Image (cartoon, rainbow, N blue to C red; front, top):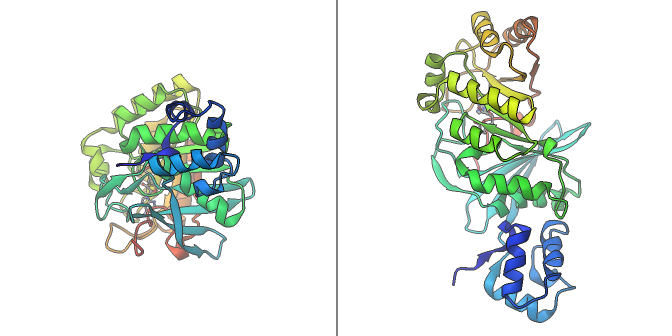
Length: 341
Ligand code: SAH
């Protein structure tokens, strides 16, 4: 018999399950707390539940999770964790320490099918989507291991979050639930390569997360050279969706722009981008490319990066240069799922 994936259940679903097992309703709260606040890994540790109930749970349900199998610590304090899933697949999660708190960048899929030419995560294609429980567990495991509280979550690891829509939205609701870790949705960022249908869908979920769009080019011709997904959706369609997103949610959107030497980093590109984003409530995150073996491009020169930023700012578009963290352990943007998997 296929066991029920208990950690991916919402509170309401868990309540139904508990009642179907003939247990009192209030047991749901206890069980939910063991999984999502105390973060225990076994039914045996759930000491306020009866032995009979725990036995029943053990027969019918599984506590699928993540087990850290390797930890690397960067000179800048960034930690990269190789996580093993219950079926033996592996993903990576990254912990970054900032003065404002700890951020964890989690993976949403095993592999990725978006094919961005500069990214390591997509090299072997998509293996499968992660369950909600497996996304939650990446954060739980980081907290278990480091003993530190996670305050920010970034859906920017391996995978395309909007290509695993239901599980990702459920994850956002559960990680922000006060019966769980209660991480504010304002501290959650979802990054997408620009799946327009997904943007409209997530807009209607009434979440207060930050939406980040991986744009990387100021026109479709160039974008298609860098990202196959650009053949499906034009920049105009993406920006239209972003405008509606901003209007509907009142949240500023972020655009990510990885700077590739001699490809998308000229002054003209910056001007073109500024014209594109004019009047949109947004922020641009410039990411000097992290070179990936066998993938497209080299990193832009520092002077180019600064010049690009200056042009955007002179057009009243706020732009920051992303501090590159953990690149010495291949934990930076685009470097996940390289050597270990
Ligand atoms: N699929 C999602 C999230 C994963 S990638 C997305 O596309 O947004 C997280 C960010 O890192 C994206 O902006 C991605 O384009 C960027 N990225 C990928 N490879 C990179 C590289 N080699 N150097 C710098 N940024 C990269």
